[in-house]
Amino acid sequence: MILKYFELNKYNLKNNKYFLLYGNNQGLIQDIIDKNLKPNLPQNIFKYEEAEILKNIDNFKQNIFNKSFFESEKLLIINRITDKSLEIIISILSSKLDDLYLILLSDSLEKKSKIRNYFEKEKDTICIPIYDDNLQTLNSIVINFMKKNNINISKQVINTLVERAMGDRINLQNELSKIENFTLNKKKIDMTDILKITNLSENYSISELVDNCLSKNKSKILKILNENNFNSEDCIIILRTFLIKLKRLIKLHEDLISNNENIEVTVSSFKPPIFWKDKEIVKKQIRSFNYKETKELIEKANDVELLVKKNPLNSLNFTTDFVMSHAI
Image (cartoon, rainbow, N blue to C red; front, side):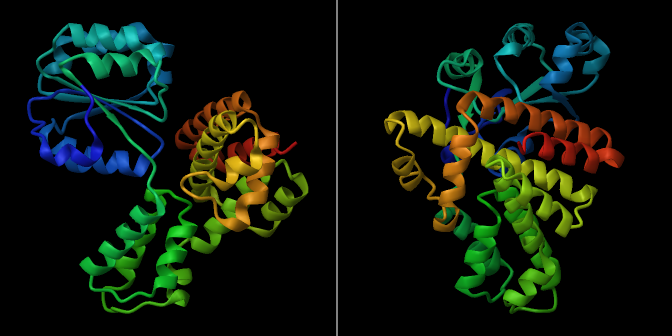
């Protein structure tokens, strides 16, 4: 069954156990899980990456079907799900384990995706497609946050927050959280405050780093790396920025086909609109990486993010190697 994410509040989800959410908007996906799904689901949570499951399917199944695993209700969350796991998921759902609840997450699933079609058609499963936030939605998030916290802020500051968040709801919410802590005893903030308390200036350098990597400008990449003292905490932001821009590049390549390979028309008509000063470098990115290469790069970025999370002490080396390996 398909449900629209903006209509979830109309439905009683208490009797539903199996969910598939797919889309590039990780911030919105997390909001839906936290606000719409988790309140009705077990708090005993087990998280897996699909890659981990596929490396040892027998061990995963043994854990799932082991009776001791279900001494209490469990919520199973599987990230980056693809059609590779369809048979495994069907075997779990077919077993009708009373105490198992399931959330599957995927960045992008095409119409022909088998696991997407399965969750759309089965009556006991719910499929929720998630779409990117537009500028209006992100502006509304900032405005509502400021109203809720009685903070006075100019339109210029709102635009800067939204622009520098690079269309990522998670980035935006992280910065708003910092603003909330900063303004406990201050109810008016200006641009100087914003640049002081957020990572916006650093994120801008990160955005430039990724843009130049995707346009294969090695000299500019080296300049940015030398001028910015990136640390291990920046690595996740760098990789997330890669994923945001790579997913946009995938959409651009898809639009390019419908626009008869006309790059100018594709970039100018893209939704959400590409900021005017970014248009030239985006055109270079389209020429630098084709659709297949972009797909492969998304997989590599996801793999590096897993490495970084498992080996934080080496995170900067992993991330720098990833950046430089795709700069030429």
